[in-house]
Image 1 (cartoon, rainbow, N blue to C red):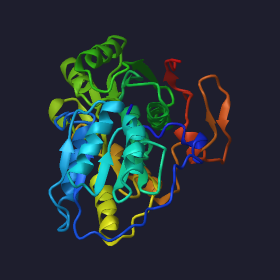
Image 2: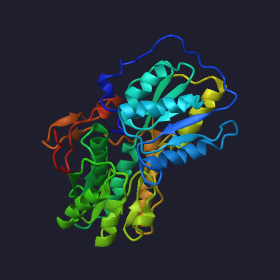
Image 3: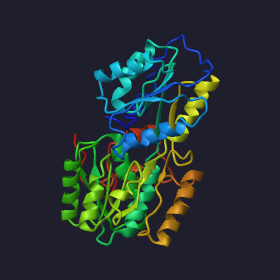
Image 4: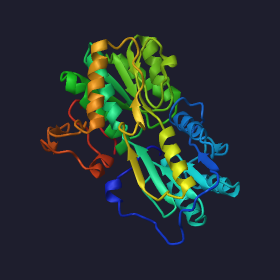
Length: 358
C-alpha cells in the first residue's frame, strides 16, 4: 500500500522515460491531489493535506483540488484522469498503490507534471518523493528507552513491508542506544486505518507489560489505549497529543509543505525535472513533534544533541556494527548501509521481539 519506496535498490534502473516532455514555465499552478484516506484521519492523509494548504500560500498557486478516500489500483486511474481533465497541470498521487495508474495517465498527458509519493517508477514527466522517517523514529526510540520502567516497549505495526520494518529497527536502535536491556515487542495488524483492530493490538501489548507504546498507523487507537491504561505513547504522522494528553511523549511527524512548495516553484519557473526525492530531517520533511511535559529536560537535551548530529551527517541510525536478531552482522563496523539496502530492509535488528510475516 502507501508509504513505501519498496525495494528501490532492485529497481533503480526502472525508468519509463520517453521523449516529448520539456518543462515550460507556467503562469499559474493548478494542482490536484489524490488521497488514500480522509483528510480528517489525523494521520497520513491529514499530514499531506496540511502540506497542500502550505503550498497554496504561494501567490501563483490557484486553489487546489483534492479527492480523498480513493481506492488504490485501477479505480485511481479514473480519478487521476479526472483531475487532468479539470485542468490540473501538477498532480500529486500520495499512496504507493497509485503508482501504475500515475504512470499510465502521465504517458498520455505529457504537458502535465506528476509526482508520486513512495513509489519507484518514473517517467520524463513523473517524479517520486518520500522521507527518511527512520531518522525521527530513532530519536523517538531514545525517548522510549529513557521513559520505560519495565523495559518492555510495544510497537503496533502495520504491514511487513520495508518501510515499516525500517521504522521498527530505527526505533529499536534508538531505544537500545540508551537502554540496552529494553526490548521492543511487535504486533502486526495488517492495517493502515482500522481503530478496532489497532486498539486490540495495543491492548495486547499492554497486557504483557509494555509501559510505552508506539505505532505505524494513521488512527489514534494506540494512543487512546495507552491513555486509558496509564502507559506512555509515542505517536506518528502528525501531533496527535489531544487524543492522549496524559500519555503522549512526542511523535515522528511529516512536514510535506516544504516539498510541495519546492515542486510548485519549479513547475512555475520551468526548472522542474523528473527525480527521486528522499529528504530527511536536514530538509525538515520529517522531525519530532514538540515534547510533552512528561519528558525530562535532560532527555529532551540528549535528543536535541542527537538530532543535530543526524542533520549534520555525523550520526546515522543504521551505522555499523549492526546485528540482526540471530546475531549475524548485517552492517560491518564503520560502514553505513546504502540507500538501496535501507529501502529493501527485510530483517529485524537485535532488541526486537517478533517475527516478520512472509
